[in-house]
Amino acid sequence: MAESPRIESVSWGAMTVEGLPPGKDFKLYPGGGRPWDWTETGTRHSPGIQPADVEELLANGATTVVLSRGMQMRLEVDPATLELLRNRGVTVHVAETGEAVRLYNDLAGSQPVGGLFHSTC
Image 1 (cartoon, rainbow, N blue to C red):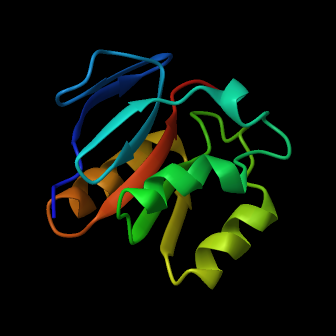
Image 2: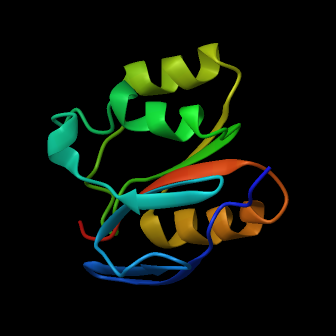
Image 3: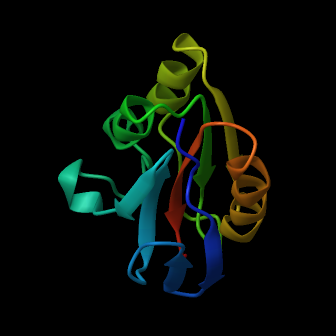
């Protein structure tokens, strides 16, 4: 299985990911990733990360998912998202963005991990 791309840097409103153009928010998964456009699923800070937001990660083979809540923890996670992941047997980690990046990078070389990363609030 393809490895998940590593996050090279994160700061307020900016991320660099190996093999991808710089951006603000990202969806990453085994073999690649892309910018995370909240408007695709109607994501807002509340109720937060939607089940539809994680479907692409699972479709690309992620068995562990890291969800970042933003630098100031303002992005919530919809309880339905956590329920979906648990029901599919996916290990999930939810953390502040800096911690989420560290955890994701630690996991990226050893297992099929996906993540959603929000680089502002």
